[in-house]
Length: 331
Image 1 (cartoon, rainbow, N blue to C red):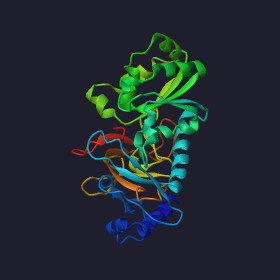
Image 2: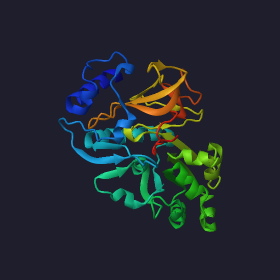
Image 3: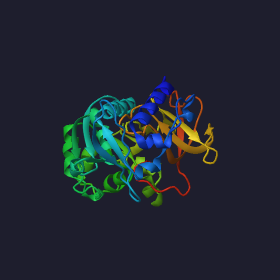
Image 4: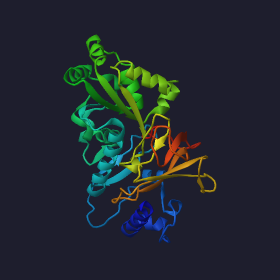
């Protein structure tokens, strides 16, 4: 079923995107996921790819955070956006539950107001919106983690016994875990169950020698029992598909997506061996980012997971050697 959808979607992009057709002029039908046409993640840094077709209206451009190097840019359209919002909401509800609660975002509200563009960080935060009954931005400067509005945090603790908090990994560490918290807010947090969701920025914490256990402990140690931390991996070039870290340490692939790992030298698919991650999903109609070969290393793992989930799963291992440092993925 998914392979058929991916074949149809690939032909859609070949018919509606001249640049994509120039890369794959001879494609007609794939008999396996490994035979499907794809693009390397790096090409999205050099041009904005667009596919034209019936019902496609390009609206905004999604930009990666790009802490160094050139930003990736993805053309967004309404048809794909609706599907992608449903996808990310379904994945997050599976792990966080469907209960609505206030959502606090470690970003500046001005990040929402950029005409014609939206950042990867804001897009990740907005994926949590279906789980929230109200939303608040905590920073007065988008790159200043220390500008966190602790008064707003205290206000929300008084209003609700459960909160959702989203931030880039390094911003949560610098702004929340290492922040100067007023005593009254610290006391309020101790009575509030908080679920922290984060993505991006581990490279900064690794340079500071901060382990995952330290990170999770510093956040949850401030809050009421039952609090937790959810770390997810995703690409700006694969909008709507995220891969949360399960309790057993693996990333699970939703049934409407697929992942393969390729040998960097032969490009052959691998199982239980490290290689280049390739991510694919049928949720991209306005541009050919439905099948992307990444610069990230991973290992596909066979069999059911100890966490109880079935289906595809993989271990995220880090960047390919000499790969350009990117700004939006959680590695």
